[in-house]
Length: 378
Picture 1 (spheres, rainbow, N blue to C red):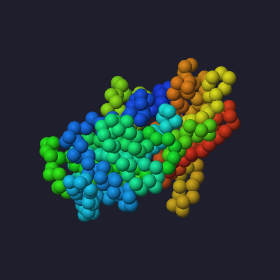
Picture 2: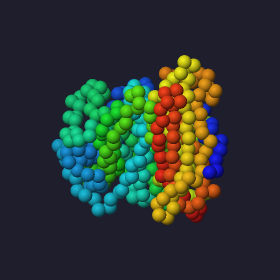
Picture 3: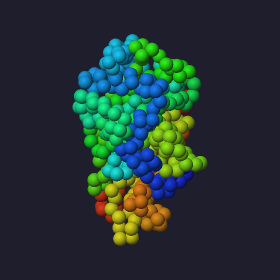
Picture 4: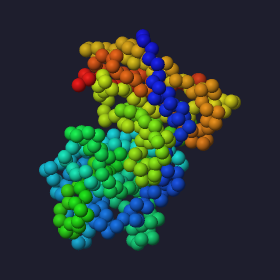
């Protein structure tokens, strides 16, 4: 079985990542304040744009499914939803990482087919306990609105969707942080009025809502575990620190490194397979350092679905000899494992990457796997 050497880009990431936790500037400062501060500073125009989104999510909480609707709001604030035949399909993909204050960080990517929605959108995110079917009552006054925490997480967006290239899907990346548990995630999007024009209050508004059920794992227990495995198109160092608003728009920035998530598990032979993850709750030795080893073994599948070993990489080792002297989990430093593997030597077909993570001090081992497909170069 041939052995691949660890790629230079990931060797650097392992060192940088070991010293950094997810850069959750807003959550670190004040988790509860971050959930309501944007809504308390909205302009009248933004509030008008947001109202149909909130009302639509309210209605779907009572019993409904994802979809695209023509939404009409009357003077009393009641909303009427009619299915819109020009549906806007939304695809939701997320990851889980350890945050601060017993929270779990959930960065996500929403993908939208090109041309189905404008590039300038208003969005509303609501995260509720799973099965909650009654919207929280609206705040009675401005003071209550600023201090209320009606749901585990809420956020609003007035943003531009990104497109990687002509003909490619539009994307929006954001994140939220919640305790471990089961949730319903609602994301509502609409086009923003051109030129900031105000539409008639009773005019129908096209709103698309995605409802996603999520079970958020608990990384704050004593269980030896890992974050989710992030499939990456590329990993890039940052040239400078992000502002809080930039961090909201680019949630896959971890410390001084930005991960560009892959849209799916299909990679061309001309591309690289990127897999990034963090390791949690390993045992520390008397030297104040862990002793963790990560092994990567690739298996190829034949036409009948049977698999055989294909290749492997050199193990990654995180111990007193390889980690920086000031490595400290108490300071938020994390072990970051990962590979960036060129696929030029891989035949076209289906593969399984087996990842074995071993805590040598605790004598514990866990396994993870990634299924991926190598496709033609063009």
